[in-house]
Length: 197
Image 1: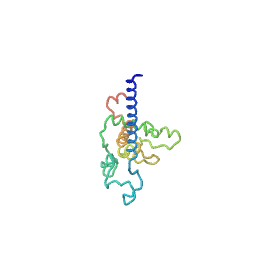
Image 2: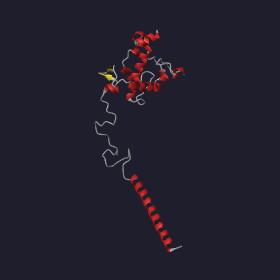
Image 3: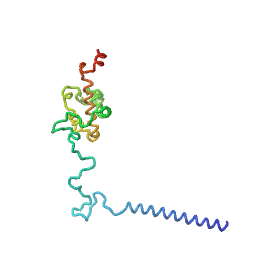
Image 4: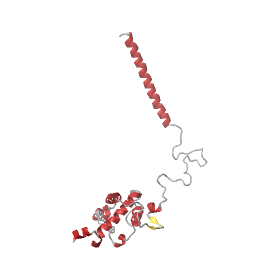
């Protein structure tokens, strides 16, 4: 072994040791940051008079996404009555989204045509009303939004499963489904009337 090889080996050894020390100190620093002095949620504290470390939000604080000023959009009501119009624009995309959500959440009971003969009914559960009965055909669109939001009879609330915009999409699709199954021949365009006759 030459003196230069020995010297180069010592340099590599010192560099390796320095790198290891640097890595270990970095890990210790990270752990120290994680274990810093702080109050955990619901931990007792002598700092505040009530003995709690958690503070109540300032009065009037609204969580992000929870400011629900528009009663029409969030409650489906106008002047305390079910809304007769959608609070969102009626578009093809809205109806397609409504159909998709309806097929997922509603068709197991109401079936895809809205007759009330879904799979769970075929398995012996209580039959829901047909969406095509006169009472529901005459109900305002806000009624369907309210039922989706709050539930009705044996139907439970879907508020935690279906976002507000999707509830309106389903309500619009239900209205379109009702029209598709209950339109009179004289209400169709002439071209469609000729094809059906």
